[in-house]
Length: 129
Image (cartoon, rainbow, N blue to C red; front, top):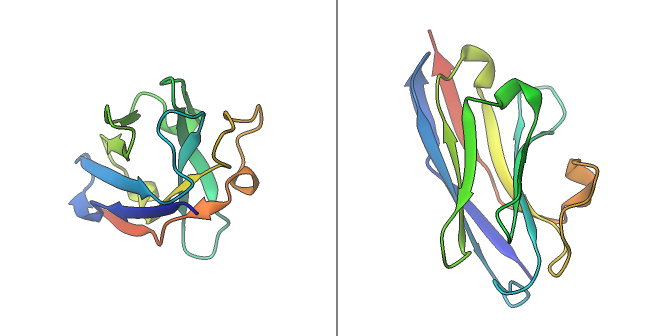
């Protein structure tokens, strides 16, 4: 299996920054095989939406609303995935999750939560004016 654990959430003022971390582990996690890991968020009462994803080769993809503000990255060991969030806005308040697709597969053309089968528990981000 694949286990993911998010950290780094908290409360920040509008315009501030946070760096979220996602620790990836498990018997099926092989850093030398293809993978796709994404960051998602879910606002209260809304569906979970995709934000950014990265694959083993460092390919990255972002939704338009976070381009230029959020940056996804990974460590050399391929066991931690990060989401640097700058210029945070009130609308960024949400629970943030990281998730992995099926080990051994690259990212799909489509970027949807439905393509990710392994999820962390989430970390809360609260942005206030």
